[in-house]
Structure formats: C-alpha cells, structure tokens
Amino acid sequence: QKEVEQNSGPLSVPEGAIASLNCTYSDRVSQSFFWYRQYSGKSPELIMSIYSNGDKEDGRFTAQLNKASQYVSLLIRDSQPSDSATYLCAVILISSGSARQLTFGSGTQLTVLP
Amino acid sequence: ETGVTQSPTHLIKTRGQQVTLRCSSQSGHNTVSWYQQALGQGPQFIFQYYREEENGRGNFPPRFSGLQFPNYSSELNVNALELDDSALYLCASSPPGGLGGGGTGELFFGEGSRLTVL
Image (cartoon, rainbow over the protein chains, first blue to last red):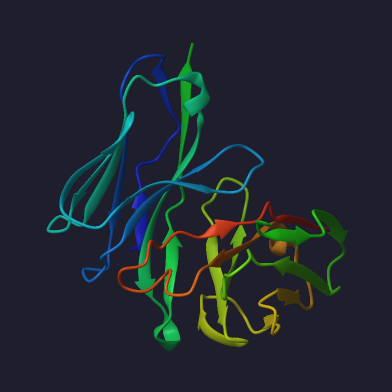
C-alpha cells in the first residue's frame, strides 16, 4: 500500500461547480496534512494545511480531515479555469533517521471547463 | 527575500554519466530536501539535509548522494545515470522547526532541474 494515495484522475468540472479531491494515508500517527497545487511546468505551491479533525476553510478552498478514517479531502467551490492544475496531497511522515519528511501522493489533475 | 534557486534548469546526459544539481535555499532556511518527480507522478523524496548532515533518505540507491554547505546551499549528485533517472529534480527548503511539531510543514520549492538521460 502506498503511503499517500489520491483518487485517480483526470477530473473535469464545469466552471462554477465544486471540485472534490480525495486522499488517504497509511500512517496512523501522521498529524500534519497539506494540499499543494502544481501548474504544468511549475513547482508545487502550498494552498492548504490542516492538523485537526474537521473542516478548514480559506476562501474558495475547504480542507477536510478525518484521522479515524485516515482521509483528507479538498473542496474547491466556484471552480475557475485558473484552478486547472495538478493537486498534490502531502503528509509529514517519519523517515529513516527520525527525520520528518513531506511525502506526496501521485496527484490528481483537475481541468475546469469554461 | 530571495527564494529557492536551482541550477541548471535543463540538462541532457547520456547513460553512465554523472550529474551534479545545485540548490540555494531561501534565506534563513536551514533544511533542504530533494525530490524526484517523474512525468505524471508526484514528487518522490530522495533525501533531506540539516546542519550539513543527511538526516533522512527515501528509497533511492546509493548512487544518489548529496551535500549541504555551511551557507545551507546543497548539491545532488547522481552517478551512473540510467534512463529512468530522467525527471524533474526539485529542491525545497524549510525554516528552522518548519517540519517539526508545531511547524507549518511548508516546503518552499525551487523551479526544478529537468534532467533528460539518453
């Protein structure tokens, strides 16, 4: 089982709709969860972080965390064509040597259709 | 404030050659992580450097090695290049305590070095 898994894409939604992106993780002790956005040919940029169960809202973005189910999601309301990108779920895991490393899922490619 | 910079941005090598990629971390950041991102995949953790020591490593063979310098800049070296090493190599820095409990966990990425192995 992969440490961080995301629902397979690509995902297409019409402009103005809600885009829903999902992620599961395998490490029960993980405490820190992140969503990064990566435009084609660019490097990832952080858009949301969440540490506690429940919802966290930031503008049109809402992150949801359920630690019991080891599940984290990202909702994008009123999707815009500029939201078209690959969305990466990331979790802090403890690697060899006790270092805390950020581990990424494979990403979900989102296309918002005008 | 200067962000994370990487060089070179693009390079082409042949199988068996060696390559060195360079990264300057963001001002004040003392931890550098390197990732490999193959086309259509998420970034895969290679290793992390803190205080000039490797303090975490992903599932990569020993021919992937690195260095961190006193100014926190870093190098990634790959020996005996293979075709599957073709990828975008990302360097990311984080501030003191950034990845620890209570830290934001945010990594600041450079624009990457795209390596093609022929």
